[in-house]
Picture: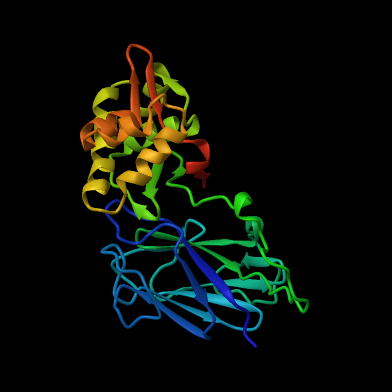
Length: 287
């Protein structure tokens, strides 16, 4: 029986329709990766070739073959030339990358941290790991398994930081903002419901950045989500109210979209800005 691996999307280019966190199960002997609809793992992005790469899973190893001559294929940051193969050993506790074309029984030369491997296909970065084993349960459970009051709702806003790059998503949908604006939003989200001073935002965005202009770009991006019907106005008002912003729900209900966005990112004149979301509505991750 072949081991089961998973591939998780952890970075995408700007304007990509592929959501962060999308997970693919790799259970077949061979998996063809590409943009074409008939590939096994379809990544519908213009940075990915129609037939980009091939994974071959054995009982104790997985090989990565680069097929595209146009768009790059990388394993843990090292480029695989077209026609060459990288090999990883599959162990109980994860994956271990070997030098290309080495025998899977040889000692690993690159012990991948946490038993994961990063596979870059064009502009899409995937994190590969061995799927967790199923934990069998033979006894009946009393309902409810988890009390409703202890269940944490899915975050409204998710940000993923990779060096100077920052990817923003709202309920799994990519939010298009300039790189400097994304870094400003990261600083605001790190201190959700609290004031972030102008000098802190300037450090994050760059000395020449226009902070009010970047904040306006963030507001416009969220307003577009509302106008597209992806972000519910009632949900947004409820989050702003829960952030102890000082606004009553009845007041928020009366606001037009533009005014609601100014309430979402509240200006403290000559001091800074406040992202009026409760901390549990925000998820931050660093690669």
